Amino acid sequence: MLVFVTVGSTKFDALVQATISEPVLSALYTKGFVRVVLQRGNSDLDLDGSASNGDSLSISKAGVDIDTWRFKPSIQDEIERADLVISHAGSGTILDVLRSGKPLVVVPNATLMDNHQEELALQLDSLGHLKATSVDDLPSTIASFDRNVLVPFPAFDGCRFRRVVDEMLSLCQIALVLFSMKDVTPASIDGDLKAYEDQHVHAVYDQIATHFSSTRYKPWPIIAKFISDLPSGWIGLDSGTGNGKYLPLPADRPASVLTIGFDRSRSLLLIARNAGGSDGPPREVVWGDILDNGWRAGAFVSSHTDLLTSVLREQFQDYAISIATIHHLASYERRKLAVQRLLQCVSPVHGRILIYVWAVEQDELSKRVIPTDGSTEDSPSGKDVFVPWVMPQQSVPPNQSTKQPTKDALTVEGPVYRRYYHMFEKGELTRLTCEAAQGIGLVVGPPNEGKRGIEIIQDAWERSNYFVELRCWKA
Picture 1: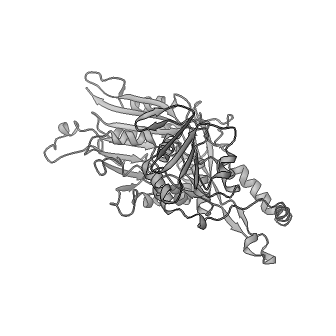
Picture 2: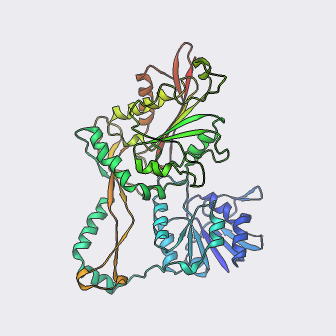
């Protein structure tokens, strides 16, 4: 049997390398697959420690013949010949495979931030049309894969479509309204800011917590590396922890650092308590507002019984991360205060901080189009917008009065929730950070004798996000 693996036009090194790995090939061979066709796009191919950049290559490994190439004008013939397709989460490829009636395993690219393709894969998995998995879990997914349990993807039925339109015009009108609500739209901020955030941020996340968490399970690489580089014994804060996906890190040294999760959403904190698996230790989480001064100065500093004085305690670094949180605050001053709270809770000597926010400048893989006519409430920089969250689809009988069979039920969108975001423009996060530090008497720049301050270690854009990494110092 033949398996076709495709990564499209993007760079997905992890899936390419996993495909030619011993665990995946052994799992495929055990299932009866003896040939793999691998379309690797712009991805690198590492064969036994040596890179191969050629367009086409044929090798044999673990009893499986592997043909790999970069691009062809069309992959439809490969899909038709395959007994199994393993694909990235591109919507076009997914629909082509499902319409061809081929069994499909989808592996979303975890390096894509706020990945809507991943949400599509998980939704289709929940409907039984395909199996969604991760690169790490691909061998076990193949080993347990049973094509017979998949639900056939429905073919387009023109007659049924016309009947549904005639009978359910009002439902179609509602669907059109919901479709328009999927767009990113400008947000107008007025009234009490805290009440505004309660309505457009906190209440929304409490409603979507379970569904939101199911799409946010893979740590972003730069953040994972930041935590992995911390020395053992450090204590830190994840301000706006959400479902707590960073609390179990570092993955290569479990429990070597302690990260405490902090969030306003009780629903998400209940999930964060078991981040990393219910069979592991419960995580330390705290409910509260990121703008409250809930921690004493330098609270997140490691300590030992033989180092009790404040002078010695300051020699031990600690850290805080704020990932996709500050952009939910509805004014410049509130965003600045959030940065100051992070600066105040870490060691003044060597404390480290990492902050991520969404960017106006979205990459080519993002589904979001940021409106250009939006304006901020109190700053010429960035855009205030509503970003929709569409809940899972629901089945609705086409006509309750006629008692028609369930098979004729319509699948319609679930509720759509609009979340407030301040989308940051280039340089805005850096300016905010500098002004926040200066506002509490810190110097921004290299260490200066007799002063306290912060140094910006990294300041960059990555996959539709801006981030800064800070290091505190006291000279």
